[in-house]
Each structure stands twice: as C-alpha cells, then as structure tokens.
Length: 219
Image (cartoon, rainbow, N blue to C red; front, side, top):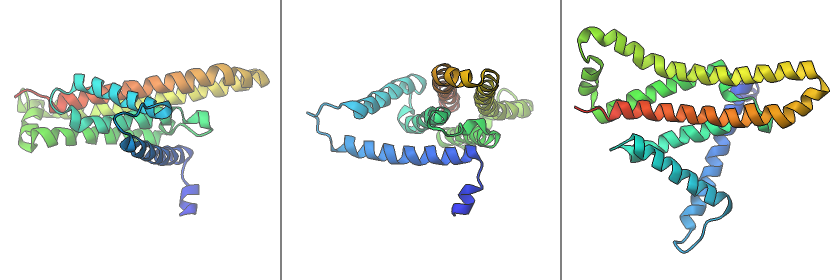
C-alpha cells in the first residue's frame, strides 16, 4: 500500500491528502455542531463553517427552485474540495488540478453528475426526449454540447492553475533570491490564494447552473 502511494503523481497525492483532511475536519465540525444547544453561540471555526453553509444554501436556492435541498450537499462538497485543492500549494503540496489526469477525471466526474442528476429527476424516457429536442436530428449536436461543457470546465481549471505555476517558476528563476521574496509576498497570495479561490467559485457556479438546467427543465 505504501509503495502504491509513493508511486503516485504529486497531483494525485495532494488530491488524496486534501480529501482525507476534508473528511476528518468536516466530521469533527459536524459532531461539534450537532452537540450544540439552541442557546449556544457559535464562535471561531464553527461560526465560519455555519456562515459558509448558510451562504451556499442561499446561493443554491436561487439556482434550484425545487431540488436545492437534494443537490446543495453535493455542490458544496465540490466547492470545498476545490477551495482547498486550488490553494494546496500554500501547504507545500502540488495543486491537484494542475495535473492533467486529475483535471480530466474531474471533467468526467462533472459530466457524470449532471447526467445522473438529470436521470434522477427527469427519468430516462424524459431525458431522452430532452436530448432529442427540438428534433431527433439534433441528437449528435446535443450530445456534443453535453460532453464538451464539463470537459471545458476541467481543462479551464487545469490551464489556469498550470499557467500560474509556470509564471511562478519563471519569476523564481529570473529574480533568483529576489524571486523568493516576490513569491512569498506577492505570487503566492495572488496565484495560490486569490486566483485559486476564484477558480473554485467559478467552477462551483457553473456546475450549479448546468445541474439546475438539467433538472429544472419545464415540461
């Protein structure tokens, strides 16, 4: 098992570390919130977690008129993972989505989630009718559209994170020791923190829109 982990790429290792960290931390926070009484006043990380959940719930309620309770836990999980994954370099890890394998896997994951969500709410027969709209001849075009969007979302994440890493490497090489200071006080806060969180939010919003469009289609 250890040898298998060692042979993994840096991006996949970071993805596993981020996933494990989120599983443990969210479980601990969940137990802490569950034990709270109505008279208790949350503070610290618990307050931040509660405000985060409430904010995501409000945003998802705007996207999903009927099924927001069913899909908010999933989209919130994706947002949490991307927030920590895109800023993993601040902890000395490789950003998972800067690995093309992870990015493509995330694209397939996003595509599958949209299709499963549509089948869950629209039923197979109705989903087929949606893909044949407005005419059966448009089926190939509709299928390409269904597949290309999540693929582009994953590649977009990969390209943005990889370009930030390349710019950082170039500046480190050109500025030598000065590059360390520039990287510590300028590059990492901008590329790893600000841009990383922005990319996570954009992916979260787009995924929410595509899932809501798939499940909230009017008959």
